[in-house]
Image (tube, rainbow over all chains, first blue to last red; front, side, top):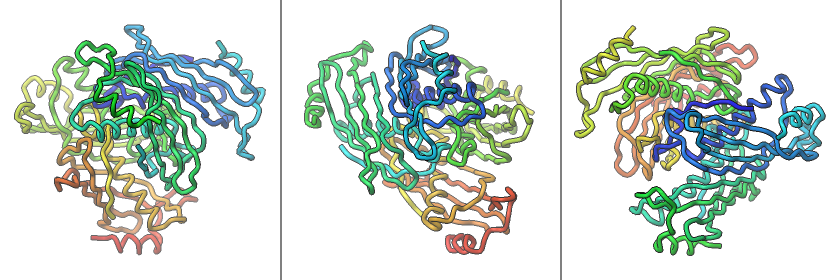
Amino acid sequence: MKFEIEIWFGDLDALGHVNNVQYARFLETARVKFFYENFGDLKPFFVLRRIEMDYLSPLFMGDIAVVEMWVGEIGNTSWEFLYRITEKRSGREVMRARSIQVWMDKERNKKAPIPERVRRVLEAERR
Amino acid sequence: MKFEIEIWFGDLDALGHVNNVQYARFLETARVKFFYENFGDLKPFFVLRRIEMDYLSPLFMGDIAVVEMWVGEIGNTSWEFLYRITEKRSGREVMRARSIQVWMDKERNKKAPIPERVRRVLEAERR
Amino acid sequence: MKFEIEIWFGDLDALGHVNNVQYARFLETARVKFFYENFGDLKPFFVLRRIEMDYLSPLFMGDIAVVEMWVGEIGNTSWEFLYRITEKRSGREVMRARSIQVWMDKERNKKAPIPERVRRVLEAERR
Amino acid sequence: MKFEIEIWFGDLDALGHVNNVQYARFLETARVKFFYENFGDLKPFFVLRRIEMDYLSPLFMGDIAVVEMWVGEIGNTSWEFLYRITEKRSGREVMRARSIQVWMDKERNKKAPIPERVRRVLEAERR
C-alpha cells in the first residue's frame, strides 16, 4: 500500500525538520490503514513486537511524504512489514523501516497462529 | 543515566496502553537529558541514524517508566546508545532499544570524527 | 480557507475518540497553511495570545474532519481567527473555535501594528 | 492541586519554545491526576465542553512548569476548572486557562446531575 502525508508545522521539532518520533506515527498510520482497508469489520488482534527505523534524509515543512508498506517474511504467529518513505517532489529517500507483529489469541492473551483469512491478505501484499 | 517518567492519559492510545510511538519520545528525552547534563552550553551536533525498539510488555496509566540509557560501541564518527525501560513497581521489563548517532560537521553538513571532549563523556558512560 | 484531515488511530485517546488536545493541532495547521499559502517567503511574526475551543461532538477513526478558518475582528496589533470543524459525511458540527494573534516587531520583541500587506490579506478573508 | 512538569525537547516546536498545543496536554494531565487521586476506582464519566487558554509567556527547554488547577463555578450538570501555569525558577506567569466539563449518564449518553460524591470533592477544591 502507498499513501501520502503532507508535512506541517506540528510535525517539526526545534531543529526545524520532522521530529524523529513522528516517523513512528507515519508507520503506525500505514499499519492501521492496511487493516482498516483490508478487513473493515474484523478487529485484528496483534501486538507490535519490534520496530527498526533508518533515518536517511530529513523532511521539512511543505514536503509530501510518500509512505509505502508491504509484507516481508510470514511465520506461523508473526510477520514482517517493510516500509519506505520518500519525498514526493524530489524522490529523495527519507526512511527505510521494518516492524514485526505477533498475532494474538485475544481470550488467552497469548500468541496464536495467524488465521487463514489474515494470512491470505498478507501473502497478497508480499514482495 | 537513569530517570523516571510517570505515565498519564496522554500517553495512551485507543487500546488503553502506552502508544508505540510514545516510546520513541522516551528515548529522545534520554538522549536530550544526556547532552543537556553533560555539556550544558556546548550544542552537540549529531544526527540520529537508526532506532531499534523491542516492545516487551505494555505500560498503563499510573505506571512509572524507569528509563536507562548507556553507551555501547563507539566508532570514529558514530556511536551506539542502548536503552532499557522497566516498570518501577513490578520491575517488569518493558522495552530494550538501541540507537545509532552520527557526529556532524555543522558547517559542511557532513559526518565528522567525534570530538575528544564528547568521546571522553561517551567512554565514561560505556557498559 | 477550508481543508480536510483524515482521522487515524494516532489521533485517538483511550476513550476511542479524537483526543481533546489534537483539536488544537488541527487549528494550528489551519493557521500555518493560511500563512504558507498567502505569504510564502514572508515569515510572519506573530504570537498566539488566546485560544477558545467548544467541543460539540466527537470524531472517530475513519472520519474526515473539514476544518474551516476565517478572519473575525482586526485591531491595530491583533486579530481574530474563527474556526469551524465539521465531519464530512454526516455534516455534523464538531467544534467551534476562536484564537487571537498579536503581530510582533521581531527585533524589539514587542507587539507592533499589523503591516499593510498582512492587513490586506486578513481583510480579504474576513466574514 | 499542583504539580510540576519538566520541559524537554519533545515539547518544543520549530520556534524553539513549547508548542501551543502541548499546553492543552498539560491541562489534560491536571484533570486526569485530579480524578485519579480523588476517586481511584470510580471511573468518572464526563465530557470536556470548552477550553480557554491565555498564553502569557513562553516556556523553554530546561524550564519547570508548575501547573495549578482548582474548581470554579459548580452547576447542576457542569463545572469549571481553572488553571494557572508558572515557571518554577522565575515565578513567571505562563498561562491562565479555564475548562468546562459536563457530567454524563453513561448508559443514556446524556448530561446528568453531578453525583453527590463527586460534588463534595469539587466543593473541597473550590477557590
